[in-house]
View 1 (cartoon, rainbow, N blue to C red):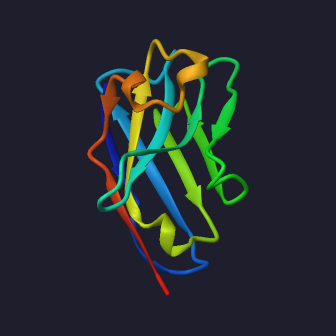
View 2 (cartoon, rainbow, N blue to C red):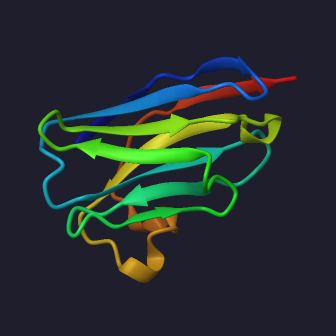
Length: 125
């Protein structure tokens, strides 16, 4: 599976963006897909994930209530709507896919076999 993330940009605090992740090569069918982010000088951080079946959704505490992850299986696309952005949300956001993710380890980047190149989100005051 090849993943291509897009939609990043520079926004003011409180602003919104819609991130997209398009898959090619294979469909998303059967995969858990998610978003991670990495800020300068920091480790990669889990943001959100959505399982194929039964479609459970998981968020990190830092984005819960502000970010929304969805997937369109027909379009083979993953989305992340990011609202109420804060400067600490500034990071490169990457999408990832996993065919054998263990539920208890969805937040671990090592579980994901396929990664997109990332899209930069910058939030300024």
